[in-house]
Amino acid sequence: KFLKVSYIIRSEKDFHVVPIHRSRPNFVGSKIISGKPLYIKNINEIKKKDLKGRIICIENADPGFDLIFAKKFEGLVTKFGGMNSHMYIRCAEFNLTATIGSGEGEFDKILKTSKITINPLTKRVVLN
Picture 1 (cartoon, rainbow, N blue to C red):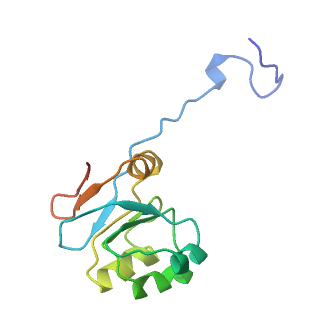
Picture 2: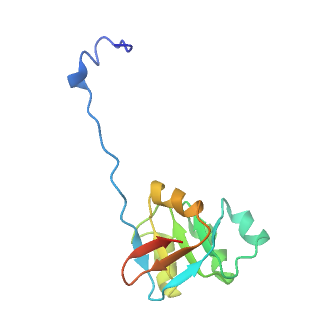
C-alpha cells in the first residue's frame, strides 16, 4: 500500500518471503569445555588480551588469525564457517573443542551470556 514500484512489484503475489533457517554448527574436538566467552573483533585484539581459560568468539577467521593458536585458550566459537573452513581444520589439528558456524542468532546469544559449555560429543552448546 505504501510502496510504489510500477513494473517490478504489482501485487502481494510478487513478494516471496524467505525464512531464516536455524544454523547447525559444526563441532570439533572430543573434550567437553566450559568457560567465559570473549569476543575478538580483529587480529590486533589477540595480542592485547589474556585468553587463558576463555572461549574465544570470532565472527569468521582467515589464516591471519592463526596466531591465536600460540595462546592458551579453552575453545573457539565462530559465527560463520563450516567443515571446510580454515578454523575448523586448524581446531581439528590441535584437537581443540570448537563450534564453527554457529549462526547469527546463536552467536549473539553466546556473547550475551557469562558462561557457556560446549559438548562436541552431543553437539550442544549450553548457555549457563
